[in-house]
Amino acid sequence: MNCKPTYLGKVISVSGSSVSIELTPKVRSGLLMIEGKAHRIGQVGSFVRIPQGYNNLFGLISETNDTSSIPDSYSLSAERRVIKVELIGESVGSDFERGISQYPAIYDEAHLVTESDLRIIYGHNDLGQVKIGKLSSSDSIDVSIDLDKLVNRHSAVLGSTGSGKSTSVASLLRAIVNKPDGQLQTPSSRIILFDLHGEYSSALKEVSEVFSVMPSEGESSLIIPYWCVNPERLIEFLCGQNELLKNKFIELIISEKQLFVEKNPDLKIDRDKVTQYTPLPFNLRKIWGDLCFEDKVTWQEKDQENPAYKDGSEGDYNKLISPSFKPPANGGNPPFKGGNNVWNKQLELMRTRLLDSQYDFFLSPNEWSISETYSVDKDVPDLLYQWLGHNKPITIIDLSLLPSERLDLLLGSLLDILFESALWGRNHDEGMKSYPLLLVMEEAHRYLSNDSNGLTKKMVRRIAKEGRKFGVGSMLVSQRPSEIDETILSQCGTLFSLRISNSTDRSRVKAAMSDGLSGIIDSLPILRTGEAIVTGEAARLPMRFKFKLPKEGQYPNSSDPDVSANWAKEWSFMNFDKITHSWRTQNPKKNS
Image 1 (spheres, rainbow, N blue to C red):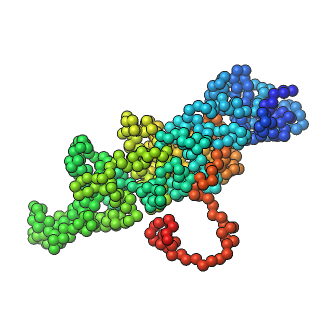
Image 2: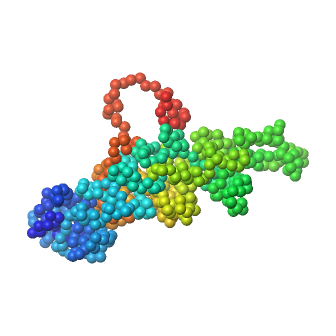
Image 3: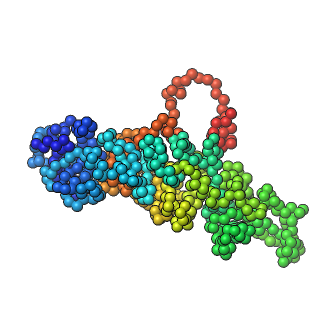
């Protein structure tokens, strides 16, 4: 009889990477006390070690069986417990590697994995190892992930509503930037969190700068200058689909940008190399006025020298007043026709957009607006400094107050600005190759579905494929993994799977995970809140663990309403004026 305290049992069958182990009667209670710490035995997702001379094979328990699944010829006792283990790696001395070079033999010993074994695997004290929680099967064992691989190889946090997803994301980001004692451990980290529900500012307030369309106290204004946005998408947003108008619009954008270069020689930009994609300011209202002129103009002469304005009404593009012209006359009499008068609908839509106050942060970008003399108070460097240059490790972009139908355009534009700056700044000290950027994208299924075909999906696909080369990593957060584009999800090297009840979502996660851990994935519906299975590049071994719980006051603003307590309150008269005012002003913040 083996007397080693970690002894679990012996190997009784080997099939590929799957090993069946019969547990010794000594561990039939399911609990082992080692060095004063309790270890639960036979838990799905817990570890097993199989010594092979100087080497140790490591595996994860994927199922537990009774004697009915094992042939009678193996039976050594009337009551037996058998566990199925998936082999996933081996250690040689103090070095651990994924994959195995040899298989165990029948009757080889199997042992419980202790904290000292896991220290060999995870290297807790190594630079770049981030402690994010505790192992589910043993509360004394810390779970660490590799920060470099988490960022460079992309990741996803997946879980049904109510599984603790938002709290887990907040806990994960806090673990990255803070030491256990609360001091900063990565003061120069660059993490941008796109918050679609405005729930993270309360959870990460002391380690983040928050940008919002309608900022509260302590928050900054979110500005996305229209002239930094992909021009084709901008035109589509402003005017809808019209190929002829689009071509003329782009021609005017290039002309305006070239004029800005001429007026600002200190930029040292070659005028002839300016394209519609060059991030230079241009006057959108002036272009609207030029398009109105082009569409409606009539001329006093055939050679089109003098416009035939009606009553001297030349219009005012700054006030969005279009010019008026005398109608063309018949025959060879003046006024003579100039424009085709076919863009009325599109130009009126553009005018409406420019007048809509909910788009001011975008179409009237304050200090980033161009003046009549072709100067700007703030330029692209100031924009990047706002998001990346402050002394907090996390930037929260609160998108909760954006018009939902324009989420794709605006989020895609933010990603476009950030990725282009990484692409062209790869050889500079301030670039993302020197200070990598992690983009955390909440509610990813809303804009990365198979049916989506917008700017955001295009940019995320590009980041997933090329981001590593330029220092940009992504983390997707979603409650519906089955709706996320398969190509994008397959690029996520690390997966954190919280409780997932839906079988379709579970199947997608199982397909995205490697290591043949079907038994562990089948446990996703019964995970506790805040408990997850992590697998992939950043985890040296796949494991089931529980995220660190945040301290009081560090939870996201996403908790369920307290139905029973609030419904039990004594009735009192209610006035709905404030709700109506918030609705009309598109501002959910409290008003007096």
